[in-house]
Length: 206
Image (cartoon, rainbow, N blue to C red; front, side, top):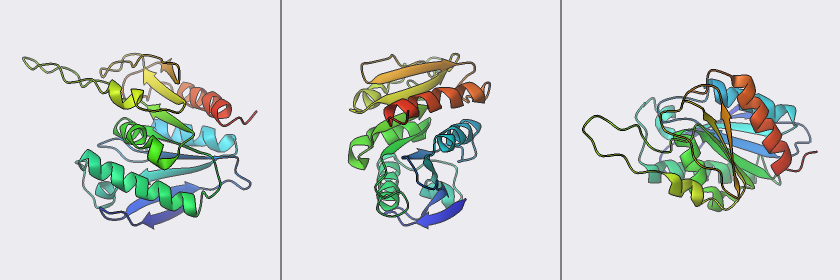
């Protein structure tokens, strides 16, 4: 593994790279709001992608690199993410078809920036569709617009008991349900299998 610190407008981000010889494409994944790149589902999907001959980058946002747990505002997350993807695309992942994604908040970032990063597809792990309703509070707004705004093939891998809900399928969006909740810890093998089959198809690796 190669670890790179990369400049962004909001401080250094960090990319954990596993570069495949003669790579057939690349997968860049971001972490959730309060977690890191060691999440079980991120690692399972990374291994599945490597088995297909893809290069993989797991990206830590600047706030995590700086040691903070509370996420930065969305505009900063998006700006830092696009800076990292651009830098990797010019160097380590140059000339490779790119799939972007992440878990939870990282999936939201990848959706919002899919067009600007030139992604061939978006892979969402536990997309947080609608925050669970708190007692005596009005329902939080749905984030379906972030998914609907993606104009390339999208895979959402969602736990059957995710308290954030389950996004609907759409013409460009596949939804794969697996055992478990928002953590996607119950069946990492099923998460990996769903991601691997979709990646093979969307990058035409057969």
